[in-house]
Length: 183
Image (cartoon, rainbow, N blue to C red; front, side, top):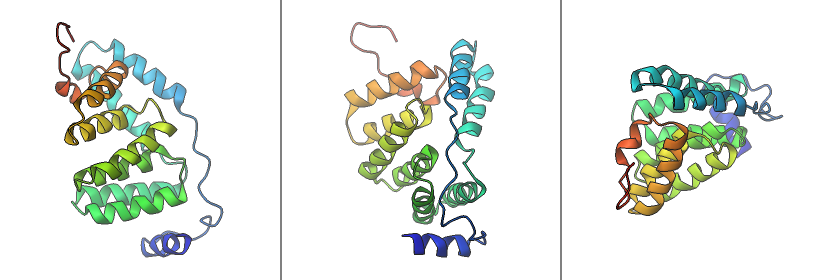
Protein backbone atom coordinates (compact mmCIF):
# COMPACT_ATOMS: atom_id res chain seq x y z
CA UNK A 1 0.00 0.00 0.00
CA UNK A 2 2.89 2.39 0.69
CA UNK A 3 3.87 2.37 -3.03
CA UNK A 4 0.26 3.11 -4.07
CA UNK A 5 0.04 5.86 -1.46
CA UNK A 6 3.23 7.47 -2.73
CA UNK A 7 1.92 7.33 -6.30
CA UNK A 8 -1.31 9.05 -5.21
CA UNK A 9 0.64 11.68 -3.28
CA UNK A 10 2.80 12.45 -6.30
CA UNK A 11 -0.24 12.49 -8.60
CA UNK A 12 -1.84 15.07 -6.29
CA UNK A 13 1.29 17.20 -6.57
CA UNK A 14 2.20 16.83 -2.90
CA UNK A 15 5.82 16.64 -1.79
CA UNK A 16 6.94 13.07 -1.11
CA UNK A 17 9.08 14.07 1.86
CA UNK A 18 7.80 12.95 5.24
CA UNK A 19 5.65 10.13 3.92
CA UNK A 20 8.13 7.42 4.86
CA UNK A 21 7.89 8.45 8.51
CA UNK A 22 4.12 8.52 8.55
CA UNK A 23 1.60 10.94 9.90
CA UNK A 24 2.31 13.41 12.68
CA UNK A 25 0.74 12.49 16.02
CA UNK A 26 -2.97 13.26 16.18
CA UNK A 27 -3.49 16.11 18.66
CA UNK A 28 -5.68 15.52 21.71
CA UNK A 29 -8.79 17.62 21.09
CA UNK A 30 -11.01 16.03 23.75
CA UNK A 31 -11.14 19.13 25.96
CA UNK A 32 -11.90 21.41 23.01
CA UNK A 33 -14.68 19.10 21.82
CA UNK A 34 -16.11 18.71 25.34
CA UNK A 35 -16.24 22.49 25.65
CA UNK A 36 -18.11 22.81 22.38
CA UNK A 37 -20.54 20.07 23.42
CA UNK A 38 -21.19 21.92 26.70
CA UNK A 39 -21.92 25.10 24.75
CA UNK A 40 -24.22 23.20 22.40
CA UNK A 41 -26.15 21.75 25.31
CA UNK A 42 -26.61 25.27 26.70
CA UNK A 43 -27.48 26.86 23.35
CA UNK A 44 -30.99 28.35 23.46
CA UNK A 45 -31.80 27.70 19.79
CA UNK A 46 -30.71 25.95 16.65
CA UNK A 47 -29.61 29.32 15.25
CA UNK A 48 -27.32 29.83 18.24
CA UNK A 49 -25.99 26.29 17.86
CA UNK A 50 -24.99 26.56 14.18
CA UNK A 51 -21.65 28.34 14.74
CA UNK A 52 -20.79 25.82 17.46
CA UNK A 53 -21.50 22.93 15.09
CA UNK A 54 -19.27 24.66 12.55
CA UNK A 55 -16.55 24.94 15.19
CA UNK A 56 -16.83 21.19 15.84
CA UNK A 57 -16.33 20.53 12.13
CA UNK A 58 -13.26 22.78 12.17
CA UNK A 59 -11.78 20.68 14.98
CA UNK A 60 -12.61 17.35 13.30
CA UNK A 61 -11.31 18.42 9.89
CA UNK A 62 -8.06 19.89 11.21
CA UNK A 63 -5.69 17.13 10.13
CA UNK A 64 -2.48 16.36 12.03
CA UNK A 65 -0.14 17.57 9.27
CA UNK A 66 -0.15 19.20 5.84
CA UNK A 67 -0.02 15.91 3.94
CA UNK A 68 -3.00 14.49 5.83
CA UNK A 69 -4.86 17.78 5.36
CA UNK A 70 -4.26 17.67 1.61
CA UNK A 71 -5.61 14.12 1.41
CA UNK A 72 -8.65 15.00 3.54
CA UNK A 73 -9.39 18.07 1.44
CA UNK A 74 -8.98 16.13 -1.83
CA UNK A 75 -11.22 13.29 -0.66
CA UNK A 76 -13.90 15.72 0.46
CA UNK A 77 -13.66 17.58 -2.86
CA UNK A 78 -14.12 14.33 -4.78
CA UNK A 79 -17.12 13.43 -2.61
CA UNK A 80 -18.71 16.86 -3.18
CA UNK A 81 -18.26 16.26 -6.92
CA UNK A 82 -20.05 12.89 -6.59
CA UNK A 83 -16.86 10.95 -7.35
CA UNK A 84 -17.50 8.54 -4.49
CA UNK A 85 -15.09 5.87 -5.74
CA UNK A 86 -12.36 8.48 -6.11
CA UNK A 87 -13.13 9.83 -2.65
CA UNK A 88 -12.86 6.35 -1.14
CA UNK A 89 -9.50 5.88 -2.87
CA UNK A 90 -8.17 9.12 -1.39
CA UNK A 91 -9.57 8.32 2.05
CA UNK A 92 -7.94 4.87 1.78
CA UNK A 93 -4.64 6.69 1.31
CA UNK A 94 -5.37 9.03 4.21
CA UNK A 95 -6.17 6.11 6.51
CA UNK A 96 -3.05 4.23 5.38
CA UNK A 97 -0.96 7.32 6.07
CA UNK A 98 -2.68 8.47 9.25
CA UNK A 99 -4.63 5.54 10.78
CA UNK A 100 -5.21 7.27 14.13
CA UNK A 101 -6.99 10.26 12.60
CA UNK A 102 -10.72 9.66 13.20
CA UNK A 103 -11.94 12.00 10.48
CA UNK A 104 -10.29 9.91 7.77
CA UNK A 105 -12.43 6.96 8.85
CA UNK A 106 -15.54 9.13 9.23
CA UNK A 107 -15.17 10.66 5.77
CA UNK A 108 -14.56 7.29 4.11
CA UNK A 109 -17.67 6.00 5.89
CA UNK A 110 -19.69 8.87 4.44
CA UNK A 111 -18.43 8.17 0.91
CA UNK A 112 -19.23 4.47 1.35
CA UNK A 113 -22.68 5.34 2.73
CA UNK A 114 -23.32 7.38 -0.41
CA UNK A 115 -22.35 4.28 -2.43
CA UNK A 116 -24.94 2.25 -0.47
CA UNK A 117 -22.08 0.20 1.05
CA UNK A 118 -23.57 0.20 4.52
CA UNK A 119 -21.59 -2.67 6.06
CA UNK A 120 -18.31 -1.05 5.00
CA UNK A 121 -19.50 2.35 6.23
CA UNK A 122 -20.48 0.86 9.58
CA UNK A 123 -17.01 -0.65 10.05
CA UNK A 124 -15.40 2.71 9.32
CA UNK A 125 -17.75 4.50 11.70
CA UNK A 126 -16.95 2.02 14.46
CA UNK A 127 -13.24 2.72 13.94
CA UNK A 128 -13.81 6.50 13.94
CA UNK A 129 -15.77 6.19 17.19
CA UNK A 130 -13.10 3.98 18.76
CA UNK A 131 -10.66 6.83 18.09
CA UNK A 132 -13.08 9.65 19.00
CA UNK A 133 -16.04 8.35 21.04
CA UNK A 134 -17.83 11.72 21.21
CA UNK A 135 -17.63 12.44 17.47
CA UNK A 136 -21.28 13.38 17.06
CA UNK A 137 -21.12 13.36 13.26
CA UNK A 138 -19.81 9.78 13.32
CA UNK A 139 -22.50 8.85 15.85
CA UNK A 140 -25.26 10.36 13.74
CA UNK A 141 -23.72 8.79 10.62
CA UNK A 142 -23.76 5.43 12.36
CA UNK A 143 -27.41 5.93 13.31
CA UNK A 144 -28.36 6.81 9.72
CA UNK A 145 -26.42 3.79 8.44
CA UNK A 146 -28.19 1.51 10.89
CA UNK A 147 -31.54 2.96 9.82
CA UNK A 148 -30.71 2.16 6.18
CA UNK A 149 -29.80 -1.37 7.28
CA UNK A 150 -33.16 -1.76 9.03
CA UNK A 151 -31.61 -1.95 12.51
CA UNK A 152 -33.94 0.62 14.08
CA UNK A 153 -33.49 -0.26 17.76
CA UNK A 154 -29.71 0.13 17.71
CA UNK A 155 -30.02 3.18 15.44
CA UNK A 156 -32.24 4.87 18.01
CA UNK A 157 -29.78 4.11 20.83
CA UNK A 158 -26.87 5.56 18.86
CA UNK A 159 -28.87 8.61 17.80
CA UNK A 160 -29.93 9.28 21.39
CA UNK A 161 -26.24 9.18 22.43
CA UNK A 162 -25.43 11.71 19.70
CA UNK A 163 -28.31 14.00 20.65
CA UNK A 164 -27.28 13.85 24.31
CA UNK A 165 -23.97 15.42 23.22
CA UNK A 166 -25.50 17.82 20.68
CA UNK A 167 -29.24 18.40 21.09
CA UNK A 168 -29.28 20.46 17.86
CA UNK A 169 -28.17 17.71 15.48
CA UNK A 170 -30.27 17.87 12.31
CA UNK A 171 -30.59 14.07 12.48
CA UNK A 172 -32.64 14.40 15.68
CA UNK A 173 -35.71 14.39 13.43
CA UNK A 174 -35.19 10.62 13.06
CA UNK A 175 -35.69 10.00 16.77
CA UNK A 176 -38.76 7.95 17.53
CA UNK A 177 -40.64 8.40 20.75
CA UNK A 178 -40.35 5.29 22.90
CA UNK A 179 -43.83 4.00 23.73
CA UNK A 180 -45.23 5.90 26.69
CA UNK A 181 -42.28 8.33 26.92
CA UNK A 182 -41.60 11.94 25.94
CA UNK A 183 -38.46 12.72 23.95
